[in-house]
Image 1 (cartoon, rainbow, N blue to C red):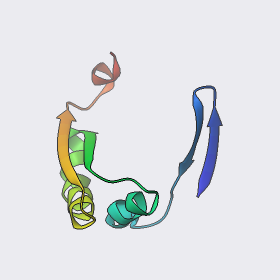
Image 2 (cartoon, rainbow, N blue to C red):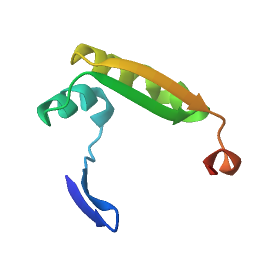
Image 3 (cartoon, one colour):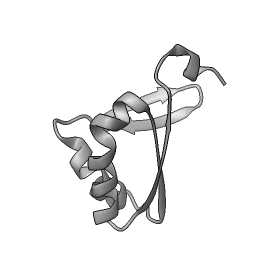
Length: 77
């Protein structure tokens, strides 16, 4: 676990091989529940969204996926 402090606040970053498969239990252990929104670019979603959604669902989360095109143009609000 890496703790990050930024101007907008502090948060933890969980880094571990295969961590995506423990995403749901990790969030549940933090006291979270209910609905999760998975937001990803199309290229990353193809590789990891199914595993993330499965982990979330198995931990009792309802999950919606929103994807967007990859690239710098998609990073601009």
